[in-house]
Length: 244
Image 1 (spheres, rainbow, N blue to C red):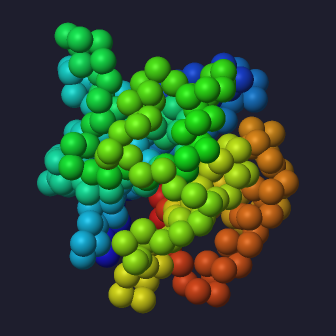
Image 2 (cartoon, rainbow, N blue to C red):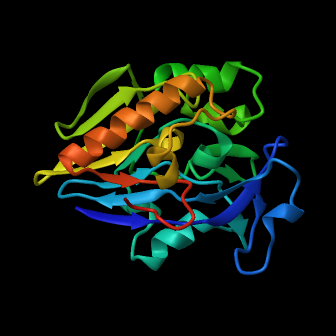
């Protein structure tokens, strides 16, 4: 199993929910609005014997007509057509921005990975489409509804015999997490409920989680299990430690 972080860079975010690029070498956090959080945006590519899996899809930044996520894939010798599965922890803008592409001529949206099956919790999709919440871009997510390339997951199950998904519901109401098992190795992706290494080691409740207490308790549970079972944890928002 091969794991490749696909970093889009560091950003700060405040109550506006706008992600502003941050140059770690030059910028100063104290000069950003009070309460700004410094985070990495980092989807992951996991290559197994049977699949090329993308875990969440970043912000969806475009440069000269090309999505940064696609450029990142190309750097490692992959194209969008190589992706066979896209596993979505949840559909907030910073996790689903690279999932869809706009047709500039017809102003319509389509899935950005033509050969991939997209896996999302069924209630998370409903919540994203029908709840007025600034964390979601419902317009570009409409293409996921009634789409034969999208599998709507229930609270817990197994995908193709080796990917375990489970409802978690801490960061967003219908957030889910994934374990990928292969050759006695376990890779865990906790999305925004296991976003950074230091959060796993520190017992605290965050204000930006839907259910902060639940998210905190889950982090403690997963951290203990990870140490006992030797998981590799993928940290979507960690500046310095993408894999722990």
